[in-house]
Length: 106
Length: 120
Image (tube, rainbow over all chains, first blue to last red; front, side, top):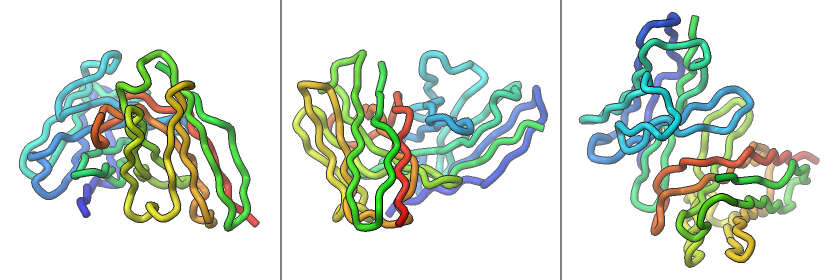
């Protein structure tokens, strides 16, 4: 079965730019999606189809996907961006999530 | 768009649970519904998808013997039943609107979650 791998944790200082990676075999040949989940809340879609932002998601969130790695980049990180982030892809008739990355804004 | 799930449940091992997901604010049969669960402190696990249009389903391989997903188009509600519950089924269960019309794709709106606790 298809697998996606994320780093367990990433730290960033407020105002800085941070990236969260998601690795999978030939992931660049598929679409990658990203979800933000704050503690005690349901996940929120922040990037779809590699680079697209849903309505209401700040411009500081961007995405890319090439080769074996998809990347979520947050520019000018704010304290409210502290959350768990999950990448996702679909494979044939199923959906796969990465293990999640806890973003800490120090 | 809203997805409103049924309330928390406490079940004994071996029992079954059914979680409902009532949708509003969009045309129910134009999007699929996926179910995703999350064990406390752990990551997201996709459980399966249902076509709200024709009722076709795709289930995660590790759950396909115990899970059934159905829908009622008259009330725009989706259901997930999990049978033969075990302690490791204790989790928050989410429904999500799925952009996949013929197979699961990705999720743009989520329910608030339904906590299912399995304990003797």
